[in-house]
Length: 317
Ligand SMILES: C[S@@+](CC[C@H](N)C(=O)[O-])C[C@H]1O[C@@H](n2cnc3c(N)ncnc32)[C@H](O)[C@@H]1O
Image (tube, rainbow, N blue to C red):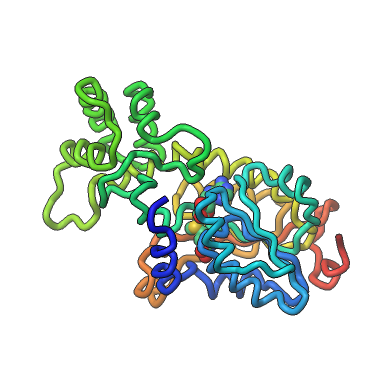
């Protein structure tokens, strides 16, 4: 990781957690509660929740990226009422058991990646700079993007670009990648971006780089983001108290659909947001990253299928 500290200091100043007003008003963290931030990142949401649950509240936070853990620890400090650990939320039941964490009053997950990860030249998430084509959120495990590019069949690559990136020219791009990799291994962001751009000439009016969708698709594939979300959603009821509030912010229509379907399970959830909450015009002006953010919130029912009031909730667990 390069210049993490410098990036942190500058991103600390400009970091704006998405939909923060809506997160607080819909999740309603209260003094004395125990909350879990499944994607701590730069700890923007964590800080808001931590403030709302004082006095006597406790914050549990995690991230799968060891580099983000360092930054989150710096930002949140080492107070006794904060526990930060590293791991993938798709193993959350086991991680809670391992760390002996009791059921929590509420949970937030803000999916995807942080600006610090995107801007780090060693991570390979961005086509705006020339760097190794890695894209793993946890660089200690798993297959890098260049390895997926090197070993996948043309059809597999096309499916990744089509399903995860909604790229209509997926087949043409996959074909070109297969031709190019025969000549030379594709190992950098610049090489891949140029191949994609050569398949999709850019019109002068187009604001979005043609490589955007392919990079997003590859990142989702490298980190198995949809698989991890599916496993996570199924484990949430095992770590939250009945009556606990759960909020998920997603940035991709496939993720939002998964959250929507999960919260539709009427034996488990009372939905608070019938439609996903999106950023206001005002927030979009300040933070364009919110453009595709969608927040859904639901309350976990008790095992008999009844909603639990907040008063009852305070006594459980
Ligand atoms: C959008 S950022 C979160 C920003 C955070 N809410 C804030 O206010 O600073 C998403 C974070 O989730 C982490 N992440 C993504 N998928 C994860 C997973 N499966 N398990 C744990 N952390 C994950 C990423 O490493 C990244 O740091």
